[in-house]
Image (cartoon, rainbow, N blue to C red; front, side, top):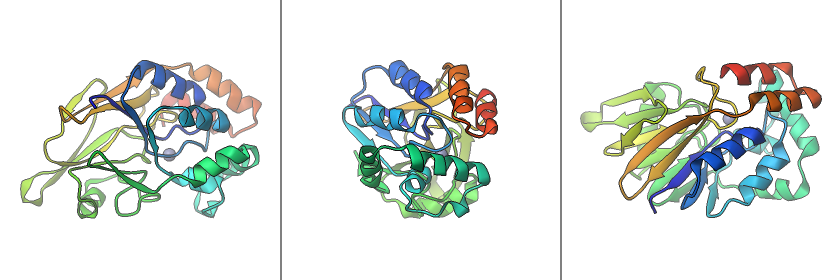
Length: 242
Ligand code: ZN
């Protein structure tokens, strides 16, 4: 295998998901790190498309768990809670079963896959080097791929227990040489002030990771958010990437 598509945090944004799958082209497998639903207007369309993806490995995110009633949305902010209630009322029986089948942690091709963090797979945010450093002992594979923060970022554990972090730029190629935690960013709701959809291609043979950002038709997603009476803020933030 030389081309594995890494995606995360689709958040019911069908237009962005379609654009990413099209831009990625032929891949040997697709690894999706969770949060298929929540915030966006197209939960069933996104799950249907993901389910039809060949050689798929898909993890459970916190919004997926909320959509099937497995976690209390009192822990969510108001808008996440409203959109979660909306998803629960819309999602098909079949797609509920699919979300219920999602694992919290998978090891694939010697890579640990989780939504949030290796220590707390569904919930913990890896936003800073301190939290990342605490998490390195919680996975035994050389690499761990995470989503959840919606920001493409790389945490490295160099020798002598020294950890470093940095944001990943579009088109940047990373050599996977030391123990690393990597985040591809978000397909459907980027939060690094870059509104373009994010994804990555992992090459296990050459041990490389390449991040990508691509434009998609944000206006059409905003129009569907408004017509579904979802919170206005969800439409605004897509155009600004937060
Ligand atoms: Zn998310």
